[in-house]
Length: 236
Image 1: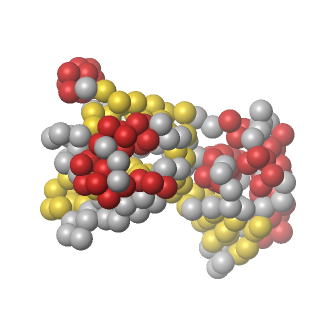
Image 2: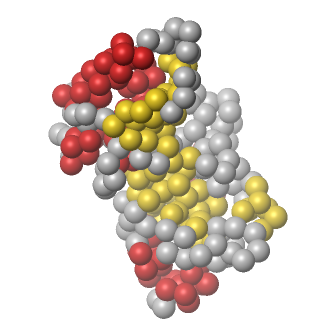
């Protein structure tokens, strides 16, 4: 059943930003990321060779167009048809991805600091973070690094003043009003409160990224023993 995201599906705001790109904007709202993800997948599949890609971003989809093949009037009409079909087919239910997380200790060195800044106990940070329902709003920084909206406002925390030179793959962090998971070991300045044994990005997997724009994410607390068991099952 469509949620209130379907209010965005009738008539997208569509603008040609160059002879090679078309931008479709989504109204802000709790389901904007989900609408963007649905639109991107449907447009990528349904527009044919004149459109090279449909790139989801924060509250918008950008179509990358072959200017030789594309007829602007025909493309505009086809885009509106596909978006309307998304609403009719009740495509906004989305996908829910559960990610197990071991919080605190060696897995989450910044948990105590986030708790102190929030004025709560570390276990309350875990409860609030794991109790959230998050939307993959957009990707950035690194392949597979999804910016997740929906973080409890009490947990909004500024990034570290000095970034770490290496953050382990799977680290779950908070950066401002977003939370997210580091898909590879890399430098980073988000405050790390836990780690997942699940692989977020694998170039040999199809698709490589575990998450997609518009997915709903829930974090499930696990202990160190379960972390090792899940990691062992995930290894080739």
